Every structure is written in structure tokens, then in C-alpha cells.
Image (cartoon, rainbow, N blue to C red; front, side, top):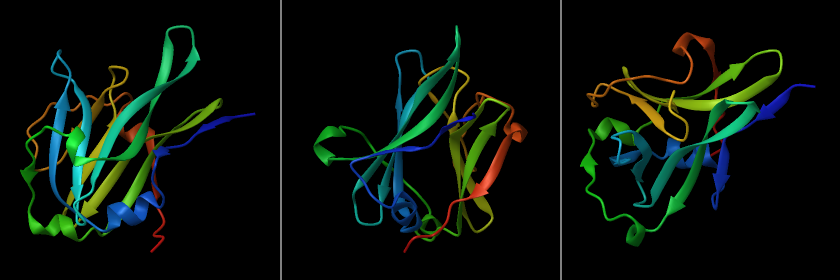
Length: 159
């Protein structure tokens, strides 16, 4: 039987509804080795969505990452947010990035689209870290698997 590992949501309901509401700004939390530990998105309602990666062991010295989402309080975020273009307040589409082989199906990332732009959030080749790709970011992009190995699956709207 194939293991199915889904995106994990802590202390929140209707993740896609939260993301579809749009976001105003972002902040990246780096590790001491300059890897991306988490991404904070300030949502339209001013709540802060924290996104990070955890791992699922599939064998000795072998694991795959999946995303975790949680709402955090402003007091926990002693960070500077970078304002985004207003187009990010209107999200057109969300897709899950799913890695699948004969033994496992794991939701390793999201693609958030607005207009002609997209934000890719996916587990990194480095365990417990993220990779981000968007026009507004100037970052190296090294996802855990080749990006074309992930199946893009529509994340249904629950409004």
C-alpha cells in the first residue's frame, strides 16, 4: 500500500481559503547557514501564515519533505516584511506539488498564481528547509526533486 503524506495544517482551517484571500507582504526566515527555514506571508486580514518543511523518512538516510502551515501571532515575528505588489491580493489559482513513486505520494510544495506570476514554495534538497521561486525573489532554486518530477494538482477553492 502506498504511503500518502499530505500538507500539514496546524491551528488553522481552510488553508486554501486563507491563501485565496491574498497576501500583502512576505518575510524569509534564514538559518545560520543561509538556508530558508520558513516563509512568513502577511495575509489580507493581517494574520501571518508561517510555512516550513518537515521530513518523512522513507529509508535509511533517505527522506522526503512536505510543507507545514500555521498561523502565528505578530509577537512571535520580530521580522521586517517586504511589501508585495497589490496583484498578490488576488490569487487566481493554487496548485499542490506532489511527488509520487511506487511507494509514496507526498505533498511537497505549492504553486500560488496571480496574473502572469507564480510563487513556488517547495521542500529543499536540504532537509527541513524550503526553496522559493518568484519574479520578486532573487534566490537560488534547488528543490528536493527536479521540478518536472512533481505533479501539479489543483488545490480546490473552499470559499
